[in-house]
Length: 461
Image (cartoon, rainbow, N blue to C red):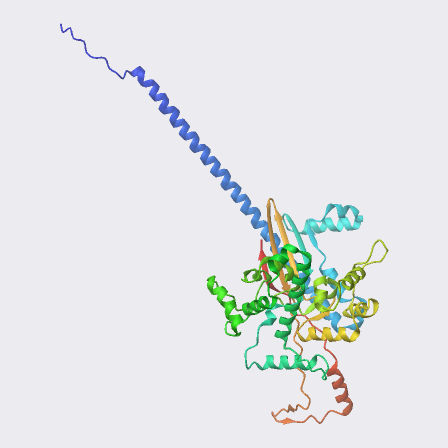
């Protein structure tokens, strides 16, 4: 018998049970981790889908609000054109009343606190309206007239040989001021440049006097160079010449940027100007607009705009005007609402005695020649449509313009009209009375007519 014993096995089946348990527990842990990660990803994706759904619905609400605002402005256009043609209706209603009605804010769902104050019939009508509207979530729409005074795009220099521009400049030169006045009249683009320069100079001066830190930083800045850069930015690259223009162009080349050399489409583009710091832009941007205003609403004038209209007004006179315009509740004086440009003139010339009539007429004539006229109802509006659904908010800010219908060109004096055979002959069929009536009709200013509203700028948030 062999006395040597066989060696003992190191891995006994009983010893392998612990390893199996560890492997099973590790597998369970891995599966639990994978399940938790999968559940987390599923919840995140679910939240993403819900958020995307909410954002899409909020966007649809905002877009429907913009469509609703455009529909209101179409009604405004129709009413405005009717009032301009009918003087009796214009005196009874007035464009300002029409604008006030159209620009009333809209909210959906309707405010419950307001409904509680309404009559039973009004509440019933409001409830029926809310039930009939297929809109989910909330919607708030505001429409406000835009009253920027000066348009930097108007500083674009017309190309040489443009007959229409030359006639416009000639008309501008001949129509403002007395013939005896030897002062050179500026064409529209140079006139607007001068007005922007004057507004910027006044704003810088006022800010320096009130803010020492601003004065220390911008005390030596030259406003004429700033205006030239703005003019350089909106004009074609080869339109302006001179050493100052070369220096301005050099700044953009050093920064490897290209100026637009085209009309601005948003006032925010001014922040792309190299020589204009943000604090300087903030001083004057409320006086500017890159859209065709044409009508400057007198009820919406700001202090800076009133100063730009009449530069000789003192701070005390401007304060007196706004005290008159806004009223004094303590003294029982109600705010004044101008129903026409004539009411504004009457307040400036007669009631407040801020400017004499001749100076007023001359100044307003200058702006009319530059394409800006005073009125109580505007043609350019800012629409803000805010849609909400769930936790999502989507805002559309749009600038809507109602272009002015161009007046038909009147036949020049002595011009002959062709007959059916195309032969130009004098019109001898008209008697003197008919000619007199047509002459009076020709001298009468045609009523302003607005065209369909169009979106000229839109911002999505």
